[in-house]
Amino acid sequence: MIKEISLILMRKLMETRRNPIYIFMLLINPVLYLVCFSPLLKGLDLQQFTASDNVLTFFIPGVLTLIASGGMFVGFGTVGELRHGVIERFRVTPIRRFSILAGMVLQNVIVTLASALFLVLLCIPCGFHCHPWGMIVSFILLMLLVTTTASFSHTIAFITKREDKLSPVVHGVYMPLTLLSGMMLPMELAPKWLQILAHGNPMYYVIKASRHLVVGDFADPSIGYAFLFMISVTLLMMWWATRVFNKIIM
Image (cartoon, rainbow, N blue to C red; front, side, top):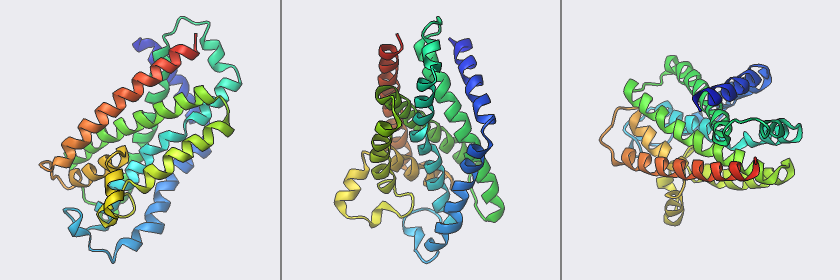
């Protein structure tokens, strides 16, 4: 299984390397969020929502989570592979169906972490201060989030098999998740009913925990809640995705 996953992973990484426009946009989009939105937070009293009044310390965890949530859109590439018969060729091989899914998702995880690391290194000279171990733990949460979102996207792509059907599903799920994540503004500013809805959002837990992790506040209970929620959701999504893959790729 490890060899099968590694073969699928290397194939997907080679595809990424051959697409410089995708790599460029993956790196530049988070920078645009920082340049165009973070200055709007300077007049906000952030210390009542986080352990630091530094704008970047508040905003970077949200942007990193946004990068990880980009796994929601990887299914469009899967639709292309279905159309061109790539998945059809996998059917005649003895490769495990879980290995196909795992290799594809692992590529999404690696690309996401590389993009997140690039952003962190870029922001440190600009005044972003982070706790090293807290940042590492935060990256683990990002790995769980991108595994969840990518598994969901690949699975919906296998079910719909067409971009015009996949697009409304992905955007219909992605938009409320982003708005209820607290990425741009703290959810504490929202009405009570929105705060209640946010507790069913994986991005909300990751952002809330990451804002404490980057300053080294490991005692905050939101960190434990985030891991408990994300591990459960990730395992559930991988289980569902594997069932769909086994049913469709027979």
